[in-house]
Image (cartoon, rainbow, N blue to C red; front, side):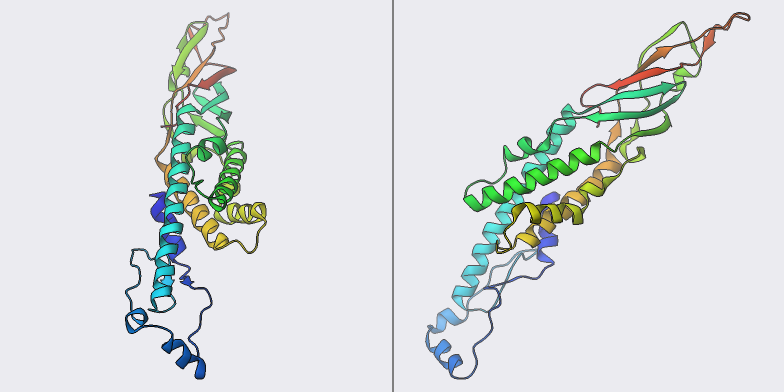
Amino acid sequence: MMQQFARLKFASFGLKVPVNWQPPQGDDAKHYGDAFKPEEKQTVPGMGVPLLFMAASTNKYHTDSQKMHIGKIGGFIDGMCSAICSAWGQWQSMASMTGVLVNAVTASMGQIVGPPLMPLILASAPKSSPMELKYSNVIATVISNGWMQFTATVKIPGLPMFPAFAAFPGPLAPPIPNVPVPFAALTQVPVSISTNMLKMQMIGQLGDPAAPFHKELFEAISNAFEQCYNLWKASTMVTNILGTGPIPTFAPPYVPVGPVVGGMGNMLPGGFV
């Protein structure tokens, strides 16, 4: 899905290759026409849905360039998105949430703990050429940093996740898993993983204004990441936060049951499902 999102965004820029080519005029047009065989002047351009690049003309050298760019850029987009998705899945299987405050039925606060995405992304990112390695390093670093900044903002805003703790018999409630809630229900500030922020950070870190198609490529992947996150947060559930805490009793009169007060909860790894 991320690959398709990225391809659609990249195709929306309507890029042509060779870049900035214009048909020759006047005497130059005749010389240009005489330079090629008839079969070289009218060739079939590369196809695809979405079409990542258009050929500037039907000249064989233009359609060959177009097909080469479709293959190289398309392959990088697919490989990079696949690496990001693989890293995201690994992160999700290892991530947890700690320091959740539990008071009666209500859970609040907490902190997400998980591995950095950068090494997980780079493990399978495209690296077959120096340029691919450079682009992959930039994308992996920026997404990893942005994700870490984002997860630091995620908190539980006081949700009824422990109904059994409203009135529990005994001095101490045993560890009980929370009632699952959507990740989207948590307080969060996703500015650091927005398309514009990721793209700006990638361009700045690359530091090469002449790098081919870098702005379009970075925007396409950043946009795809943000779109996938918006789907992920709505479909992912927060589970396996094991809450526990003391049950105060009073005398007189003696109260045989009571709510948890000042309890804590910690998620088992892999609780985001």
